[in-house]
Image (cartoon, rainbow, N blue to C red; front, top):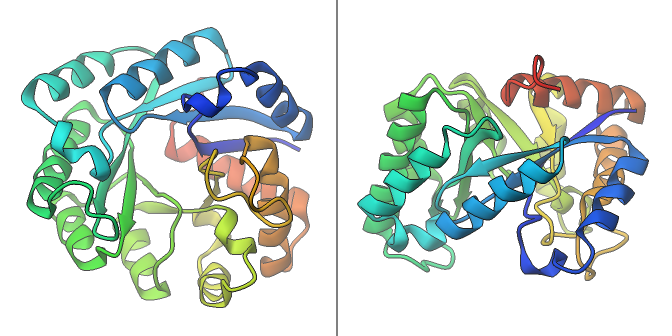
Length: 257
């Protein structure tokens, strides 16, 4: 069984002491590629540095909406230069987060649009974060459609997912599909075609059942795949195969593995 971990933060300080062991546990369950995602300039630089150390790791670079206030001209110029590295596979995670409002909303929207334009200019797939900001997120995405990328850790409605799919995006599902109170989200999973789904952990966050409350890591994709297989009434190996093909397509890995 081959699996692509499409969204992890192995550049997080929680992995400083045991990253090689974390990677090896994931490889044991079949993970063949790790998409290591930045959230600001320093973490994006670290994602690239780590990817250069491990052949089965790629970097995703960009500025998260939480950190949109740091998206200065200088930072974006440095990120654009960093994107020339062969290890960079996508731009993200970018988008809007009105739940925490860690950056002012107008600043978030400005940073989102600027990064969408850069990704489009560089012909890089995008990784989108949206929380409590559906309409504004869709409005920006529509400005740049058609698109190529992932709606990361999707938590919206089937109607929203359908709009995103029609614009060209894949839907990323993570640990929350295993949560006991996630009935509505599981209904969305049943509606999204398997051919448009990718799997992710968003580690170290959002650990799935039955390891909820502990530090998350890519090896826990096995729990997410098992729940996805159950919801789709398909064999786990088949779900892994299809979502891996999807991940290779969206991150253009077919000729790079």
